[in-house]
Amino acid sequence: MGYNFSKRTSHFTLPKQWASMRVAKKLEKETGKKIIHFEKGDYQGPDFETPEHILKATVDALNAGYVRYDPGPGLPELRDYIANEVMKERRPGTKPEEVIVCAGAKNALTMSLLTLLEDGDHVIFPNPGYPPDEVWAKYAGAKIDHTPLNQDDWQYDLKKLDEMITDKTKLLIINTPQRPNGQLVENPEEIAELVLKHPDLLVITDEIFSQVIYDGKKHKTISSIPEMKDRCIVIDTWSKTYAMTGWRIGFAVANEEIITKLSIFLQDSITNVAAFIQRAAFEAVSGPQDWTYEKRELLQHKRDLMVKGLNEVPGIKCITPPGSFYCFPDITGTGLSSQEFTDKLVVDAGVAVVAGTAFGSQGEGFVRVTYAVHDDDIHEGIKRMKDLFSK
Ligand SMILES: Cc1ncc(COP(=O)(O)O)c(C=O)c1O
Image 1 (cartoon, rainbow, N blue to C red):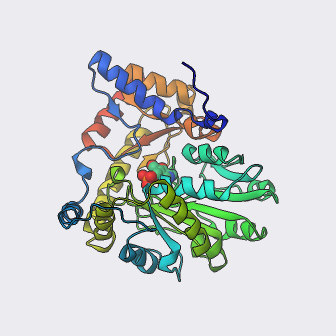
Image 2 (cartoon, rainbow, N blue to C red):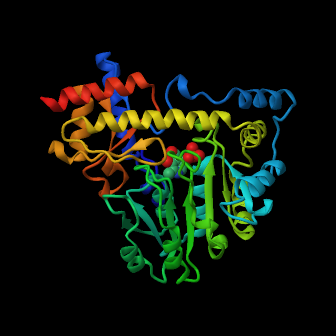
Image 3 (cartoon, protein in one colour):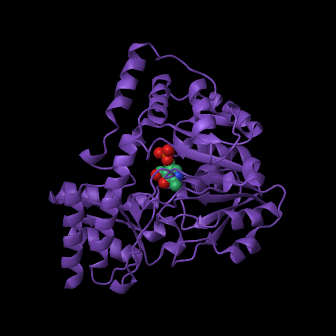
């Protein structure tokens, strides 16, 4: 039987970035061969379990009876802590009423896009970028303009960005550290200058890897610029900082008027993030941060191992990404397109990566590789790549 779905759902297509995972899983099932998984956007293996004290806080919260509706935009002490501590430098002067706790950054992004955009609005996304956001922008009826990031350093081309912004542009999307390439947006001040030329232009700044930055570098955000404070929606999550990807909790920070709208959206859609999970999240942000510091060092070690290995594979060049848990090597030296490389690598060597084009046309010539995996997998994956491309 055929169903009459709403026309807007024509934008719901299976994400291209999952294609590699589907092929890898199929191969694993059919051949029994061990596939090395560098394609996932998640932590893998025992190096990255949610810290023990957070698990304990969850069990304590369950035993204390936090199992009912917990309506409102978030646990008061959690909103308070985010406003006063987490945002202290990122958006000075944030009030608790300017914080909403959501079911992950994705939920915060979806609600923000659907709340702000309507038919005919334009929204600027970086290319390469994060495709799920685009689905909701299109669902809202907005037109997407892609601003190509420079392929050598993945920074915004300010001239192109300036030319792209028109009176119809309602939103600019920034993501730092960036997915899929792990680079930091280095010049928020200059981007702010362009934005401030347009009185109604808002910015969504997706900062889900804000705590996963290496080499002593510091997270920089456009929302810390005083004139940008009420122009930005800052989005962050517990997923990456505390290895809580499956817990589905994140937050958004913006002017109270925006947060009030988002709160009604949250209330009328999912009601609230599970009460016991919010209590665990409070323990995560306000409790000891040793785990995050240790894992950052461990990830930096894995990044170095992966980048060094990739640079030893014939035809591959990889710059060192300062953040996230991805690197984005240039594979043009192999003579293959991103998709051909990805397909060949998984079929011939049993190593799964994601084609750069899954994140936009500027990703052609690159692939995304996750290094939040066991060291043994990094060694084995690199060995298989060397064997394949040395032939
Ligand atoms: C750029 C970006 N934004 C948002 C998300 C979603 O994060 P969350 O797990 O908090 O929903 C991801 C997930 O990997 C991401 O890469």
